[in-house]
Amino acid sequence: MRSQDGDLAHWETVVGILGGGQLGRMLCQAASTMGLKVAVLDPAEDCPASRLAHKHHVGSFRDRDAVREFAKSCGVLTVEIEHVDVDTIDALATEGIDVEPSPQTIRIIQDKYLQKVHFQKHGIPLPDFLELKSIESVEEASSLFGYPLMVKSRRLAYDGRGNAVVRSRDDFESAVASLGGFEHGLYAERWAPFVKELAVMVARSRSGELRCYPVVETSQKDNICHVVEAPAQVSNAVAQRALDIARKTIGSLEGAGIYGVELFLLADGQVLLNEVAPRPHNSGHYTIEACYVSQFEQHLRAVLGFPLGDTAMKVPAAMMYNLLGEAEGDAGFNQAYQTLRRALNVPGASIHWYNKAEIRRQRKMGHITVAGDSAALVRARMNQIISSTSFALH
Ligand code: ATP
Ligand code: MG
Ligand code: MG
Image (cartoon, rainbow, N blue to C red; front, side, top):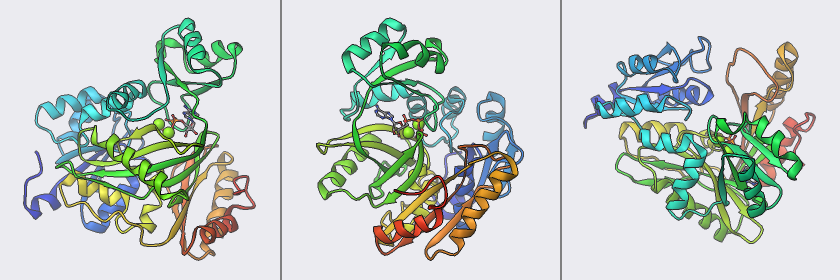
């Protein structure tokens, strides 16, 4: 099933994506421009990718049989979420099914503790960390790393939902309980007193060539990505350090595709790795309008064995804003539509709506990107769109 050399083979290859959320949807959009075929496996009939996919198989990407059945109809299997049944894709790869990035990479990344161990072994700078097995080990972590102490779930984390901040001894039990207890798999991280959070998207070809997108700055609100500014307003030295770390980080993994590398910038200019996503990433949405080749097209190129595309920005500046649900039901939809409507009147703004069937507070419903001639201009234009909401920029 490994895609053959020759153009026809490439174009006819069905790219099978485990997951049909917004990232799967935007992969379908990129595939459609290029005339490529994308199938998705997702349990929700009305998942964001369902209407745009060449084929939507209804089933869970965590279910062994569903993944096996789905793989039969795909030329190459990839993911839009790392929380998939990795044992099954590992077995499929051993049986000769083409899986990109490699199941081993997904296995390392889906367990954030294993991720830390792997990257530390490869000499990537990151916050100190310790596996947590008991209250005594939380005590040990707090005496080693001090307060505040970050306690994290090893698995199934997203949007900060697997994180708990421990500020004193009094918080130990409640932090552990809020993350489901030690049996759930926990670890502690030294607090990173960052001045900025940075991110770099890195593409890796089947032959191992690496290409980095520009360094961007991400701002989180309540642990969820709020806005992304591209390029990051940092010195050349810091940008180069971030790019070097991102390249080395992804160089230590196996398999083709796009990867998101989240970084902390400290006051003294040090850059530390936070975590890696083995797939398109929220911090790369700006690439759709602002770069020659978007992260989504790049991922398809990489897994299909096409040449990687140009990662440079084609505009001086861009800003992306995540449209989160602010209320449930119709009230939430109305608020979101008002924001989108305002964006339609702003030069350089592009709107993305993911067609999720239900709106929930803090759920990513869409995003808006403003591209323009300077960082100040795109910021001002973005604020025209969101200044009247609770997400105004300061
Ligand atoms: P994502 O949605 O990006 O997958 P996640 O749930 O995996 O998020 P992290 O990226 O580990 O969570 O953490 C979420 C946010 O919490 C980070 O972007 C950062 O703002 C903050 N954070 C994480 N680790 C630390 C740390 N060691 N020190 C300080 N802040 C941290
Ligand atoms: Mg994460
Ligand atoms: Mg993160």
